[in-house]
Length: 487
Image (cartoon, rainbow, N blue to C red; front, side, top):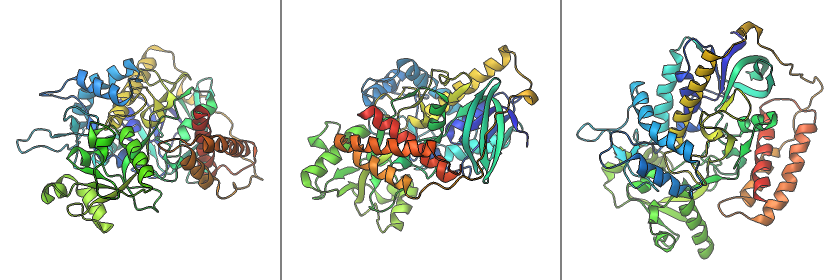
């Protein structure tokens, strides 16, 4: 396998895959993923993808307004305009790539409703839309002769060079150096900085950390979305998500006494945006001194529920809960990051040639809180923006021949030692105590001091550069940046 590429893409979620698909096929592209190809947050997305596509009673103006309301009107208007106006193009493109969205009895694409949306504009594949989209994008990428895919490839270090970028990538624990003219970060979220998250095991903020260390602007990392309805079994770190679409189809939220309570907090009831519902649950829990909350959709037709939510139904059944008869225990947990590596409307960072797409980026489209099902859309829209910008630059600018790309030196110390045990666990505990739904400023101040110590220790020590080190350093850096913004 060649070590020099036109473009290296770190991450194989929707953003990374779609970037590769939209790059010119005369470019040499390397896609790397930290573990197996399918392990990414995109594949876990249940609800769907929001878009105004062949609407009967919808418009981009309404989609824009719903996104602004959810985001507290702190959204970037230029990025948001691109998001809603390009949505139809992306829906049409992924359908052409084989994505199978559900249809109604008349054969028309079915649209569901989710919290914060004023219209039914969520395209979905049952309750596993993200998996459907990512698997079809993977199939398309695998057919592209110009794209190499490396699994079990850990991005350890990256340097800006005179000709682009040089990356130290550990492939099955063997360090190799790869060079490229352009680099796209599509490394996903930061969920593993918390005790409880809906994110996959690899969501440790690696791309954000590496971009930060190169000097890229990181913005609004403290804008973290806590999903209100994660399955609450009180002991699993990776929480199973009960999709927003369950409330969209009419589920009620109930407290420990079986009472509905959202009417005391917001006139939109269960269909209020996620941050509102999460705050309501935590506030109600403090009032009742309880963390027992439930999602109740037992009043709906059982066959409808089994057909509409087959994955959720099957999972809950494995946990001893029949959602057609039983209330579902839920509680908020970390879900999504609105901030990240700051980019412009073409997905370019403040470092020339470095792009960021998907959850690791900060496009500003979400404002202070993401509207449900805008995340997959953002990954696709700005993945294409990045690809088209790179294509334009390749056409118009003079390019160094691939075999002449500069290669940086990444020293490995023979006497390096493994990092101490328990660092990641300590970081997660600090973040869970200090910055969860309703921040605890006293804990945040103390946590910031300790996180700063851990970060310095990892940066200054002579440690083996492996998965444990890279992820611990990423979590420490992410936690540091979050709490620095907060305090």
